[in-house]
Image (cartoon, rainbow, N blue to C red; front, side, top):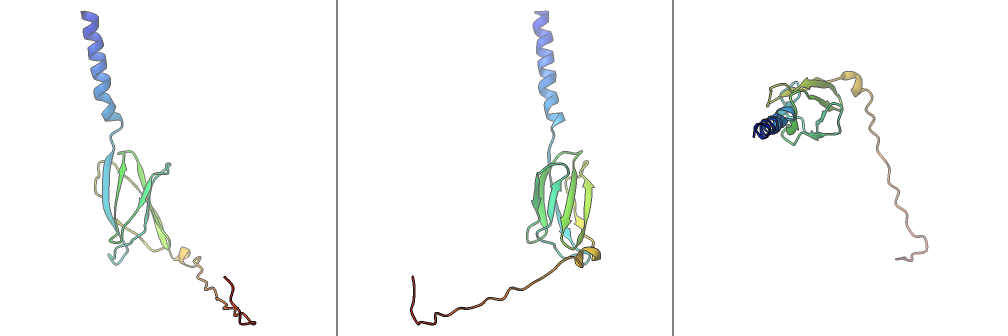
Amino acid sequence: MKKMLQLLIVLLTIIYSIPIVAQQQVITGKITDAGNQALPGVNIVIQGTKNGTTSDFEGKYSISANATDVLIFSFIGYESQSITVGTQTNINVQMEEDISQLSEVVISALGFEQKKDEMGSTAS
């Protein structure tokens, strides 16, 4: 009887300690620029993993993370930011412009050439 009681105590201890080890929480927030305008399409990734999300049209995001995780916020033309989750469940981020990255963006236009059949026939 005593051994069964000890076994029961050990099993209960293990069962109750599992949620403490892997306690994920949902982190939400809004991402804006220096003028408090929402930034859609900002990448949010948990450092060292492939888990991530992007901000919606209103700059809002939601991601599941542990308290020890570090969130990386990145967007073209802005400096990346790293924030440790800790006990926070709402993390609002104001992205700062990165002038050096802006000079690296190249925009090009492609010309389209329309070809006509010189014989006047059509092909299908």
